[in-house]
Length: 219
Length: 226
Image 1 (cartoon, rainbow over the protein chains, first blue to last red):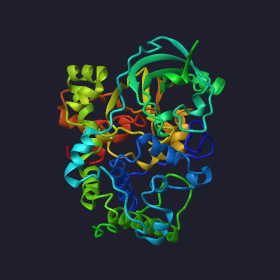
Image 2: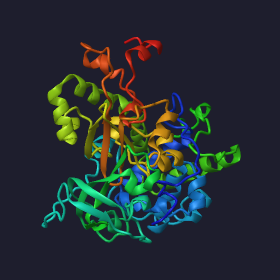
Image 3: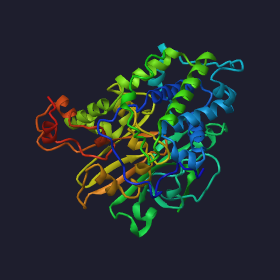
């Protein structure tokens, strides 16, 4: 969706401000949000694409006024409410008002190391050949889906060249909405800066994006 | 489980990477909400408090840019490892024990005098956790995500990094689950250095591509004992 999260090429945010000797967290609650997000993710009640979509669905004015962990918190609250795990009323009350749902997976302390080490590989076997190979000229589709997508606005309708075939990966556009992993071939696609930004582009700029086959058409 | 909730309050610099300034009452509201959420999740049995502590401990003490510096220093000093890293970064990095969440599919990008690589995630904050740890605020911020794809030289200048005009810049937008690690150029004057000494030159931002590796002179000026 064309939400506030899709920032590539937006203007007016000012300079980047790297912080010397930056602490890992800027407030104690940030580390709790990180841990809660990972622990609830491990219950399998939603996948990584659904959690990205929950964050990008935050209305733009809210999204842009929140710090990063505040965005994570808002996304988690939304997912918890949608899945009848924790209601907004419970959050306001600060305590459980309804019995818990039975979850098949709860992350235990002794399983944390193994769970993190296992991660969540996104590659999947598929029984069809990749449509494109290295060197093929493609164009990204012009599309503005109301649901989740990983084709940024700045790179839509642009000519590029397939550089690498990563394999078939879970397709976020369906997976985010509970419509299945629907694995699709994933490519690293090369773009010239001038084909994205026009004549104002830094002439020495090129870009690489990882794009799924349904985002691309042959030229 | 709540005795560690206030211990880094003095570290709060309000540096959330954007212009919105949180006043104290707003901050407290967020803190209270997080505390309420945690207590409900524990009360309902959805999360194990000990698991939360184990998760935090992992990213505070075990996983960070030192891991990536080890990978880069090994690539600088061992040509066979460098070749493996460029050919199959996932396997090469996993061989050093850096594995798992947000590092399942790795690609290494080698900087050269002709080509400089920079990594971003314009859509969220994708970052190679097993080798670099959790991303800094600037990496997740609107200024970086919006501008580095369009004006990378301008963004690099804000890090004090100036590249020759003849050096091309390749920006990698991490739109999928593939994660990128930049191998900065090995600084001059490091002939004969072993892996451990070299690793001290590999600063975090050089593995994202916004800075160069630290030079031996810069390291000495910073007073590093190694």
